[in-house]
Length: 114
Length: 110
Image 1: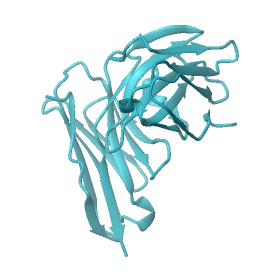
Image 2: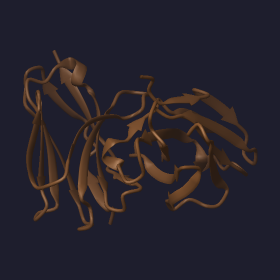
Image 3: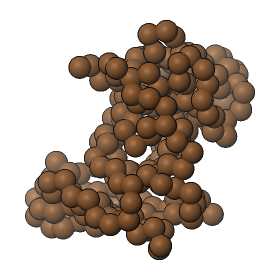
């Protein structure tokens, strides 16, 4: 059984650019959630995807968007990058929506915006 | 006021000590309570989750929930240097998202 994987591991972007982060969910899991973790803070919920539909969104602007594919992998897209977007972006999967108590996290993508 | 409050530490203890980590919360709708461990530059790893008030034990770890006081704890017995990490409490009310504390950094010294 493979765990949650994310790519890339880290990247550096310039303010105003766009970025796409990728996540492959754990085998058998159909729900993916994305979180942003700023340095020294706990993760903050961005949104969740269940069966290719958005299933809940946190307090993030529309320039944060996502997709889920038929194989349950997912992308997080961020447009018009700002300096405050620098953070560790975490993807978590669970075997169905509503089972947040068994969410398993990937290693994260560290994004630096300069 | 944050929904979940957690002392960021750092907390330094000698090997073999009992560690107590705590969170308080304000949202009465929280139903599930989780503890995650996060090593530096890694993703959070689920340690335990509880639903009701009371204690739940798993090896050296005990999770405690007091819903009447809106207070949860994680106890680590016989702490080891490998337990050195940041411990995050997390809570769920909407069944779609987790609300995390800021994390407590723990250092177990030899």
